[in-house]
Amino acid sequence: MELIDESKSLGVILRQRPAGVVIATPSATHAKVAIPFIEAGVPTFIEKPMATTVNDALRIRDAAFGSGAPVVVGHVQLYNPAFQVAKNVLPDLGPVHAVLWEGMNHHPRNDSSVLWDWLPHGLSMAQALLGATPASAQAWGVGDPPGFKAAIARFVISDVPVVTNVSWMSPLKRHRMTILGEGNSLTFDDTAKRKVSLSVSGSTSFPSYGDEPPLTRELRAFIDVLGAGKWDMTGLGSEVAIVRAIAAAEQSARSAGRLVAIDICQS
Image 1 (cartoon, one colour):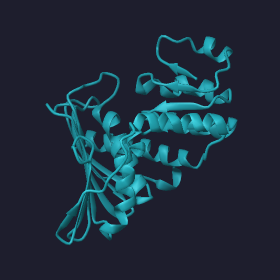
Image 2 (cartoon, one colour):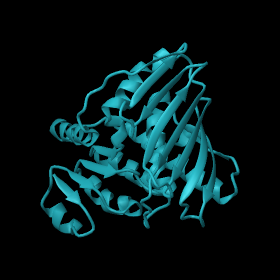
Image 3 (spheres, helix red, strand yellow):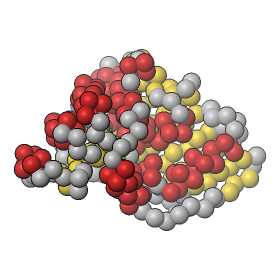
Image 4 (cartoon, helix red, strand yellow):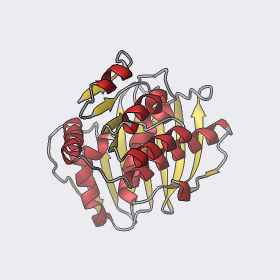
């Protein structure tokens, strides 16, 4: 399996016929780098985000459908044992009324805005919890577009508001999701000592979870894909939906928070 960075020659690696590749190039280059491997039938792991334009996301999806090559997008928190436990206990919360998520640090990047850096985490988790994709987006950014350094974005997924707060301007790293029910709450906090807490009817519990690193679990899952030689392609629709949602949020932020509808039928 090859890890693809900017120092690698795509032609050289393609001639080697790798069993699989991991794309870890700047976000805007993901489609350019990944598609030749996908079209050649090479199983491909793409670090999040899948792409930074809807057109590039669709090109990746169509290339995968055309060649049959497995394409996996890296959402490491989906493999976090604590998040997986939070997902399992979600039914104990009752009907979900809202989802609040914040992701922030002090590590600005020059290849994308904070929306493309952080929102794939929150949106992939929200989609996994709610079993649907965003129908609308509204956002307000800090900094000159398109290079926003911080932003607040609101999405609607299956009629549930998902409010996100992302920033490269925080002195501390934070990655926390709170799911609100009727007087109850479930929190996943990746930077806390006890990462999962469930509060129901005034009583708080702390479900246990494993300690295997999420990245280890994620890469093992991709290796399993290499062994099986196949992958559930229906998941690519959810990946395109994430790109559509972030693009809509960026469009909204450039328009002072104008509500942008997302055509989920196109994902």
